[in-house]
Each structure stands twice: as C-alpha cells, then as structure tokens.
Image 1 (cartoon, rainbow, N blue to C red):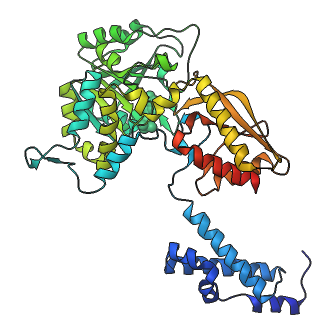
Image 2 (image 1 turned 90 degrees about the vertical axis):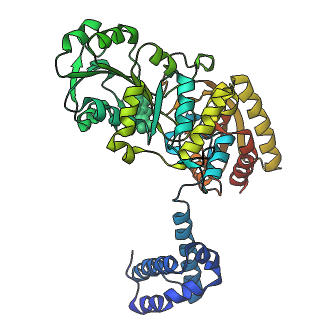
Image 3 (image 1 turned 135 degrees about the horizontal axis):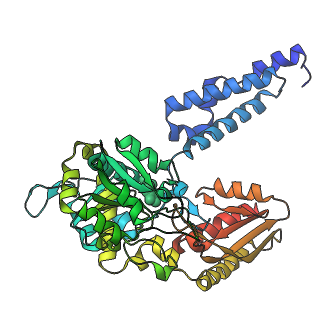
Length: 472
Ligand SMILES: *Cc1c(COP(=O)(O)O)cnc(C)c1O
C-alpha cells in the first residue's frame, strides 16, 4: 500500500470516533442491550483500535463514513459473539447422530421433562413418602426393565462409564482384551489410554482379525480381573475374522471368577434390524449372553440426552454406587428428566415413533423423496419469479453418525442447489449464518440438503431460510 501523505493521515485519525461516540450511536442500541454496558465498552475499544490501525495504514473517510464503519464493525462483532454460544440449528446434513450438532435430538416428551425439571424437582426426593430419595432411581428402574439387568447406574457419558468400571474393578490388576478391539472412537476415546488411566494393566491377546477362546484362556493369571470386549463402533473388520462368542467368554469368566465387561457404545435398547442396523448389539442380548456389566451412551442410538449407562449385576452396580468416584461422575437433574422420558417411550412400545433418532432412521427412501418434492414446490413458490437458482432432486445417502454402524448408509433423496451468481461456498455460509442456522453439505460444488434429519416442524423455517438466501 502506498504511504498516504501525512496530512491525509492526520485527518483520518482525527475523524476516528471516540469509544463513547460509538456507544451512543442509535445504530448500536440493540447490540448494547444484548451485551450489556461493560462488554459493549470492551468491544467498542477493540473496534476503535482496529480502525486506528487501518487509518494509519492509509484508510481514509469522512467523519460520517468512519462512524458508520465503526457501528457496522461493532454490530458484526456483537453478532459473532452471540452466535458463538449453544443454539438451535437445523441439521440438513442427513447425519442422524451428528456429534458436532449435539448427537440425538430429544423427543417432545424428553424436552418437556427437561423444562419441567429445570425448576425445583424431585431429584433426590420421594413424593410418595415425603422424604429424601435416591437420585436416579426411576431411570435406573426403567433401564433394568428394558435390559433385563439386575441394576443400573448413570454417569456423565460412556467414556466416564468405561473409565469408572475399569477403575473400580481392574485397578492394580490385568484386563484381557483382543487386539481386534483396541479401538479409538471419535473424540479421543482410545481403549488403551482409558485403561491405563484407570490403573488397570492391559493384556492384549490374539491378532487384529482373529482371536480365539484359547488366546483368552492362556492369558489369564493370578492378576487377571476381567475380560473386556469393546464394540468397534466406528469401523468394521470383514473377511477372515474370528472372535469367541460372549456366551463362550462368559463360561470362561465364570469358571475363573472374573468379570466379563462389554463396552457396547451405541447402545441399542431394542433390535434395530428393521431400520437397517443389523449388527448393532442389543443391550439385553449382551446381558443375557453373560456379560456381567455393560456400558453404553445415552445420546447415540438410544436417542436420549448425553449420559453413560452402566447396567449389570446387582453387586457390581452397588459397588459403583458406593464408590467415591461416582460423586464426581454423576449427572444432573436435566439429564435424568430427559433420560426417564426417553426410556418411558421404550417401555410403552412407542420408541420408533416418538424418539427422533429412530423415527429418522425409519423413514423410507420413498417417504423422503415425497418430502423432497413437496419441499422443492414450497421453495419455488417462495422464490417467486426469480430463476437464478437451480433446485433439483438427486439420489444420495444419509449416515448414522456418532461412531455407529459406519457401513449403513440409508438411501435418501438430496435436494441439490446451484445458483447463477452465488457459489456453493457462499450459499452454505449464508445458510449457516441465518437466524436459525441451517447446516448443509457441499457435494460436487452443489449445496445439498437431506430432509432425513429435518423434522416436519422445521420444514417452514427451512424453506424460509433457503428462500431468503437464494432470493437475496
Ligand atoms: C461412543 C463410544 C464411547 C464413548 O461414548 P461417549 O458417550 O461419547 O463418551 C465409548 N465406547 C464405545 C464402544 C463407543 O461407541
């Protein structure tokens, strides 16, 4: 940049508004109310400093222009600050359990239960008796009913559950695990690391693709406490593979007085083969086959709030309940409220209809295709005479996400969008920055929307937002 002459530079610096002038301008009134006086003063200071640097580098403007620029910079910073929090978005990616977007969206009943319990609630109180009660009893009872477990306990997430089980039962001893199950599951959950943190010693057996019962048998010694099985969740070994059944392992652990622990992860409470999820282990099956304790997430295929669920034998669960670590890992009233309402839908037999994750996975390709057709019709109506956007249906695939069932990619109909004067990147960004952000994907230079993960009630907001972006 050429050096501005000294006179012009002095003039631009003189034109800079004071912090007070920015804050008193009518154009920032809304932002000021949102942020409060103190935070606004901080942002105004940052804006004026930024403009001073620009002025020194040669940016010139009249007093009015410079003030308008300051106001717009201030409002933009306010906007960035307010959208950096946790807020509702429309997930148009087709990834059902999207970890970045909060994993499982909750059922209406679970949302209402959370709002209800956000006030004073019966977290540790039995209304029937009018006395102090045990936190989590209802959720634990429901879990026992649904899984056939003797008892259950709820902690912060499945990583905490695995860490807790290993710490309580394997610290100072050895844990036998197949080399095929030494996995990493998205977001830094690595089986060997969790195990070493817990104070247990790892004893790997077999090979990546094949481990036999005799491998486990040979590894057992005086220090062995448990056999650990981990559901590989986010990847699959196919072909020449072998792994002893849980039933065979449980015969072995019973004989040798060891604990058989299975970390199931995604945690299907019912058989989901009708939804295309054929090899997701069902919790009740694992327990029936002889696992002494199982752990799984509340917000993956179960479709509830973030939680780690530990289910299994009474003696083991009670030991965890009395363990000092439990106090550090337990969940809050909102998680219990949401989880109870979610589990109640399973008990009523209404899970596939009421729990969003299951309902979304249950939508057939035809159903989504029909929804896409009607969505495009509404969108065209909103766009009116503008012919700049090209909107068409293309076949594609949704995903389960959340590190579950990587091989299952349900067929879907995508809505693909291109525009004569806007790039895909610009459209994707504008959708993201809308007042209800829409998160879409870009595939082959087209913005694509998958309605599988968009609920019927979000349809109107989605049409409005997309029309605004394409029509502007
Ligand atoms: C997802 C997963 C975890 C981690 O669960 P979070 O609830 O995310 O902590 C642990 N183990 C397995 C097998 C998983 O699939």
